[in-house]
Amino acid sequence: MHSDRFQEIRSLPLFADISDESFAALTRGAYVQNFPPHIEMITEGDPADFLHIVASGRIELFSSWDRSESSIAFLKPYDTFILAATIKDRPYLMSARTVEKSRIIMIPSEDIRTVFERDSDFAKAIVVELAICYRGAIKQMKNIKLRSSAERLANYVAKHHKRAGSTGSFELPVEKRKLASFLSMTPENLSRAFAALRDHGVEVSGSLILIKDPEKLDAYAKPNSLIDG
Image (cartoon, rainbow, N blue to C red; front, side, top):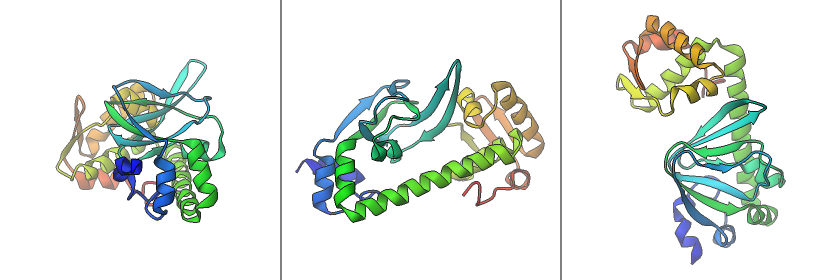
């Protein structure tokens, strides 16, 4: 069966509870495409023809206006984008490009909407996925509005240090210019924020972040499950 090619996504929460028939219907027109680094895959304002699933690599979601550009999110395997536009059959509100070489599974939006209408388990899974995305957007808004630039950076560093196994160091997953945009800073503000974190146990060497005192960093960052969880 064609759907056998896509078993790697079968256990994702979005597809785990749907019938084999529905999964086959979703994947019959799907395909896999490899993209080199720094390629724009979708452009805001274009029709949402596909639901994209990151099978490998890393994707940046971003938006542009006039001469300004801002990074909105960074996606990893097996994140999806952009589900709301797919379900609503509306234009993309963000653009997407590869940060590194990436393999993307692309499911036609029309098939997503067809199965959504007839499979209640799939409809429930989509509601849950959209709720997660909504809560993530609210948390990101709170992070930007309620914290200083240094506090936002401190929480970013603390989170990624834990993701890296709390080993005392980690490599930034994105270049500093994009990190500054994601945290709603200028590159100059990011440099000043990194300098401010030296007093809280953080040192920087290029893209390598050294955590000299994790407890001191956490005490300054004050991670909160209603913002960071």
